[in-house]
Amino acid sequence: MATSSNPNPTRGRWWIVVAAVLVQLALGAVYAWSVFNKPLQEQFGWSKTEAVLPFEVAIGTIFIGSLIGGRIQDRYGPRPVAFGGVALYSLGTILASLVSSSDELWLLVLTYGAMGGIGLGAAYITPIAMLAKWFPDRRGLITGIAVAGFGFGAVVTAPVAKALLGNTDDKPSVFLPLGIAYLIAGVVGAAFFRNPPEGYAVPGFVPAATGKAVAGTRVYTLSEALRTRQWYMLTAILTLNVTCGIGFISQAADSAEEIAGVAATTAATMVGVLGLFNGGGRIFWAWLSDRIGRMPAFLGMLGLQAICFAILPFAAAFAVFAILAALIYLAYGGGFGTMPATAADYFGTPNAGAVYGAMIVAWSIGGVVGPLLTAALYEASDQSYTLPFLVLAAVALVSLVLPLVTRMPSAPATAPAAEETAPRS
Image (cartoon, rainbow, N blue to C red; front, side, top):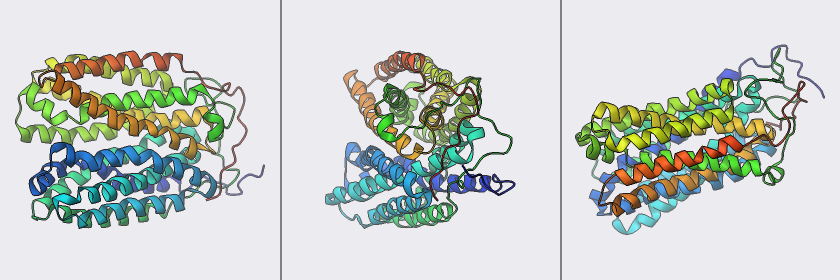
């Protein structure tokens, strides 16, 4: 196979990382939805369940965009998929500004929810698969950075959206400037996206033959990956990690008020700060997985959540509650930071967009089941968080079995792996 004639083929790859983070910051704004709940309820008289429906639909449809976008990216490169995903996501947000009456919840669900979710999924998977090809020497760390921007998106967007909402009586009108901002940031970032040239290799880097994070020797297509039990085991691990984490995230502010007895403003401030741990966890656990191994990292995330959820219902001291909450957010974000590198190790990078894109169904399943489970258990236990959090602790504890029994579908490399062909950019 031909090799790159560039004496330093890695030159400029960190600028692609910056561009990827910029796109992910725009996409991660979806996690700021809680800012809109009460304003929309007050303007249109919607129930809490109705107000959160657009967000649930957005999360529930992400896997559609990631599956389709991942397959297209592996064939045609990341840039057109990123442009298309960002455009659909931003257009959905912009069109959400047209909602003007309580009878138009369907329009908000269709635009912000379905359009936004599908576009988000397509744009989200693109930098993850792309950067795994550019950084075979730092696969865990770099995919963690790639999705950290998503975790930090709400931290940036929430205060801006809250300020805009406070200056208008027409709450949906806020979606117009936000959507335009997402479009500008996304298009600027996506313009730098490209795959490495054919024959790309990092000078001096030899794939590890020993150690904790060793890649397999075989490249899988999506259809081949779906015929392995490992694909389903990895998807299950991510699903359960998401279910536990987002189950708490959906009730973080309310549970802080009830368990720790803090005021609503204090709880809201805590939630904003916790977003930093969501983003930071994506980098930390991904970096750690490069050193201790992918499955030991998932054992750490799930085990940490099991311990935190078991203590959380009894954490009457706000400082203790906040620390436990931060650790849960850290582990939740860690799943998204570590799984892309795990999928690339197990199934190779040439088809990473399609293979990991299909795994994003775990996000949609966990993103719906977690909040519904937590809310249902809360109602069933006379509005107490003891039962839901103890159940989440049990779920995390049982989930520890999966990382213990999950093995790579092909043998680890015992010699420098054959170069993988990068799709055209």
